Length: 286
Image 1 (cartoon, rainbow, N blue to C red):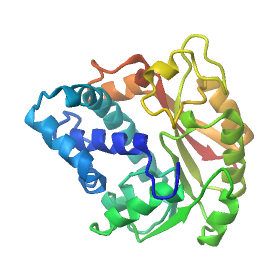
Image 2 (cartoon, one colour):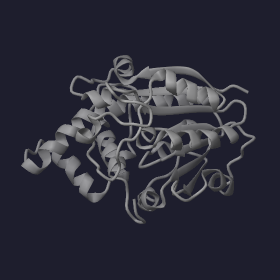
Image 3 (cartoon, helix red, strand yellow):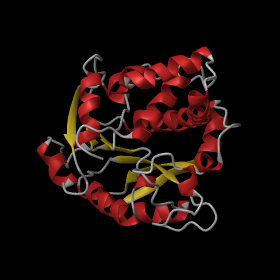
């Protein structure tokens, strides 16, 4: 990703959330901020989707949006509930993308939200966020290029308080990281997590022949963004072991099919790759 360039996957996820807003049957889902964070091109695509346009250029994207929107509904609700339960004064959103929680969740009224992302992706989000009023007490943008910057240093410079409980949000990022990168990030989270801190992670469980740090052979054909390849899948046992080493005790680890059934989302049209998504919530042990 280059300066001034946003993430294609983040744009697509935001588009899927915008498509689900007001359309899903899941009563707990709402994301009125998603539309504001879309590019003009993505907004036009959403309008064509809602109008039922059938041009050839839109058919694939519209199918994929419908396939992903209910998946996003399930994982969004699960993470929202974890944030509400944490009720802490700091939230660190790792790889924040075009997520709008700081602008839509009233439960963050007393919290400082640290939006951590690549400078290229974050620049455009800051421009689009100017049209919104934050629900959070304060939003601090923390530009981090993980290839060259220290996450620990960046958070400290932004005023993150390591001695104050933190809610860590790591949604839709882990599959794009190697096992080594996941471990390195967890080490920083561990060092900056006071007792009472919590962590929500969205990750992919392995399909056949997939191993930690090595994507399944089926991944390239399902990955739409060649510059944002999937790089790691984890079994629940492997993820639990990683979190345990980082000082976190797993409170829940559920797959999206189970969550969708609970929340009233419909995954009948979802593909296998998105069905393998899981949401784990953990608490700092000491």
